[in-house]
Image (cartoon, rainbow, N blue to C red; front, top):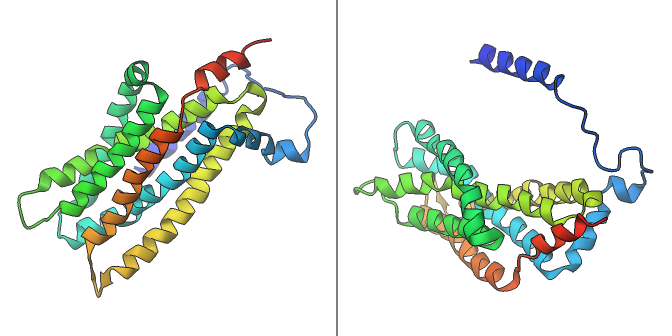
Length: 246
């Protein structure tokens, strides 16, 4: 497996030398501290919808951290065999829902896609709060794993697409970096910390009160749906058209 991965990396590395030269926007322009730290992206926070998007993107990373930190422990503690193999269904789901993303985007737009992603998180944790390995409820577990593509792609991939469309070419790279820092940086850090605190609080020896643990991210995801639906308005299309004007 290691040799296969190394060989694939080598092929991709050599292939990259055949790609056309595509220098970034602003190449050769003067560089200052504000540009290097991405502060130019902060001016977009004055827009209510973009600010709502960034804050909700940060907060949705907390449920994400609960899943990544506890799902394997949860399955192992309940005696579910071949847990790692079963969880690979999430990667299959990623591919499927990513292929569906362009079709759904045409029908329900950016806001609809992001809300679907938040609903998927709520459904996932709602199912996990009710799952019991002692009764015939394996469909709950597999459904919770299978919606991963909606959970991840419709929040993070759609989020990056929204940022790319919302920012002007001059600050696009800085805005993408800011979004990554807020979500996969600060959001995952806070989420991992909170997941540890909640998991420790509901631990009893070698077991956990899983219903109580999963209830925390389930409620948080449900609240975010309401906040986002009320405060966010997709104005990326108008902004994108404006950025293309000379």
